[in-house]
Length: 161
Ligand SMILES: [Zn+2]
Ligand SMILES: [Zn+2]
Image (cartoon, rainbow, N blue to C red; front, side):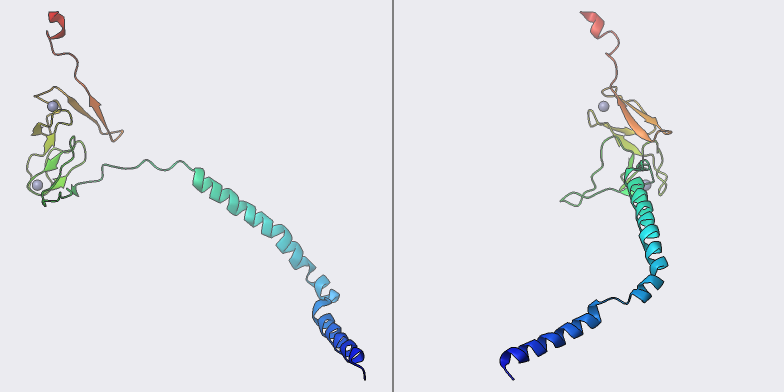
């Protein structure tokens, strides 16, 4: 037997083997046709629904960030001293920062203090107008936002010229 014949024999064996794996069993495939239809139709449909849902979730207007939730611990500076942001009531005794509109500490019942964002002078949080610079810290509790309103010209000041 020549080497060519041997190769041909091996090749035929390979073809036989491949045919067993590759040639589909059409009968079984036709039996699976409803499944293919199901996958072909339902699959894309589900994909579409998922896609629409994902797009909806991404584009959905996010619920308003709620900032006024309650007292939070004041962050500490490098020296370990609590740092209080201006414009927010705080309790120095407990080191708590309170949401806008709070006037009394929940913990120690102390009057809360607020630092004026304009001039840095502290005052009782229940007072909405800075006695030093006149800045009004108006608190709109419904909108839960803080409005900083610069005071108008001091009475008699601008009219002097
Ligand atoms: Zn307190
Ligand atoms: Zn001020």
